[in-house]
Amino acid sequence: MTARINATGPEPTRVPTLAAAARWYATAGIPVMPLHHTAAGVCSCTAGPECGSPGKHPRLPHGLHEAATDSHRVRAWWRRWPEANIGLATGGKLDVCDIDTTTGLSTVLDVLDVVRPAGPLVRTGHGWHLWFAADGLPSRISLLPGVDWRGRGGYAVAPPSLHASGRWYTFQQPWNAAEALPECPPALRQLVQPAPPDIVPPAGSGEVGDVHRYAQAALDGELARIHAAPRPVYSGGRRVTGGGRNNALHLAAFRLGQLAARSGLDQSVVRPQLLGAARNVGLSAAEAERTIASGWHAGLRRPRAVVPRAGRGARW
Ligand SMILES: [Zn+2]
Image 1: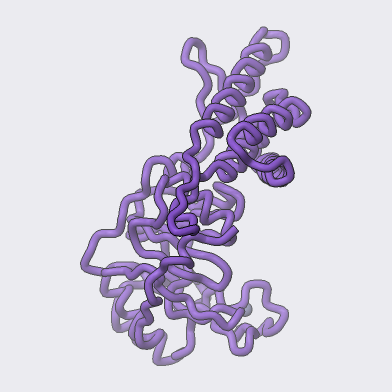
Image 2: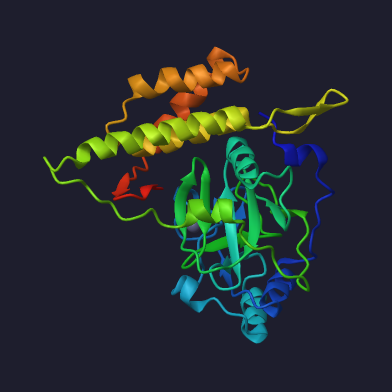
């Protein structure tokens, strides 16, 4: 799958130096901290080639707690370590949607129902960062397969840091410090917010039947979503909007996989129905099988519970 962003993206915007960029962020009110850097892919920390997070972890002993917007402090750090990568604390002014894969990017764009994100877009070593205005959201790993959220208590590496791969972090869509960052759209926010508390129905209370009913309702809902996913739009032989049926299928399999453990949803029940829906909307059997398996297994790793509430239906 080709990321839509690459096809039409503007020329990357580079800021002059790491030191200047660090001050630029700090002046805009985003707390900054120096990170280790890499040379030929090797981290500047004492672990060197053994480092598990080359060029991405803080240089300061107290890490994120020392992140600052004070320009004198920021200037001093980059005078001392001119090659230090830039870490931006998230959760205060900036939140970052951290995407590692092209499938992750496509899924996020489909969740947002856009072809391109509205605000700043950073090309990272292997993926993308979408910047949003911080809104009290927590940091969260794997809100979708290959997609993390850097919110409260997190940080993100910023342009023009150098990734261990040798690629610079660059803005594919610029950040204008004078303009407000876009708000996190509700559809994405919903995925970031913590799952509702687990309520396991007491044995023999009769609610187990409810759980099955809600699980079936969830399956029906996902099938409807696959059928409603927009068709791809082509212009001059090139896909200009994703359509998103394969991504809708992936998201459906992921959500149902999340429910599998406690709801009694079984892959042998779910798979044929998802496959049938996928075939109905024109996906090939082979593509659909792969997508379902990938989404289902990702969902199993992030279980959530069905929460039956009397008379209110299921909460997701
Ligand atoms: Zn290191």
